[in-house]
Image (cartoon, rainbow, N blue to C red; front, side):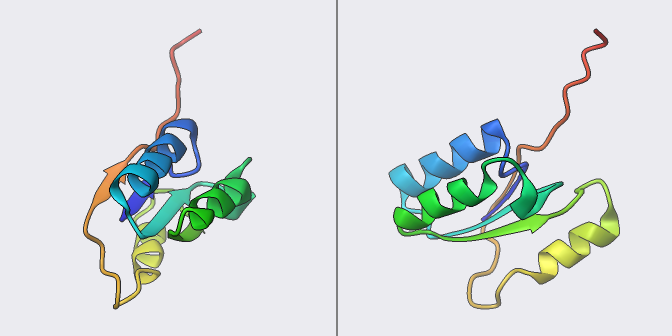
Length: 94
């Protein structure tokens, strides 16, 4: 399963829920900063302690070339079964 915005507030909440409540075993969490995102390594460790295999990747999902590189990370033995788009930037004009 791929979650874009996977290290952000909404993506991390969803990842925790999917692993803890639904037993999702393989997650690809993509965000613009990947492993360098605040709290990303802690999130990975938490999800792995619950039994999930977690890959963190840096990807701007608005860039086609970066998305292709991201999709190339998907292991043949664990093909994507779902994609959840939780990435976003708040720009409310204030």
